[in-house]
Image (cartoon, rainbow, N blue to C red; front, side, top):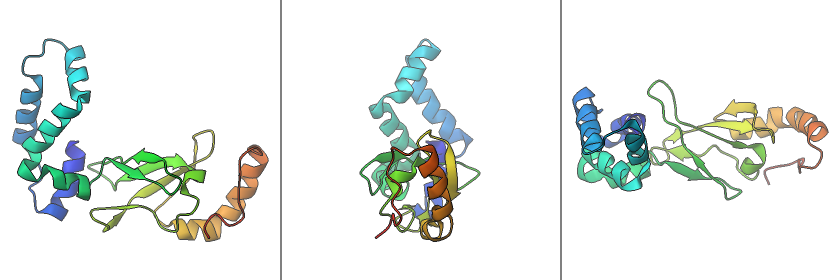
Length: 163
């Protein structure tokens, strides 16, 4: 979540959370817990995650979801987790078929930043990573399609995945 808040900072005008804010949020999270197991459970609880967001973002925590959403819905209906990193752009990963019908990569930061798309084969291994879906469909998909059709004949591999 710290990377998510740090990603949103330039687009919201928020300061990037420093060590003091992070430690204060962690102390709040740890209050009353007695073991790492309890801490692990608490860290997954949505109410506590929202509390940490409020502590790091203040009253504008709701804007965090608009600027740096946790999940994105793809054309096929599947929702995927957005991964934020301090050292790189946000990215998502899902099966290639989930992107059929999409000309462009999804965007975050209120439409300003395309996410890096990890296109996966049915075995969940990466086939391609790109922010240029249209270029992928035009230049690389025909070759990838023939290979995947051979390996995974039970799956649909349309000639034109974007209409």
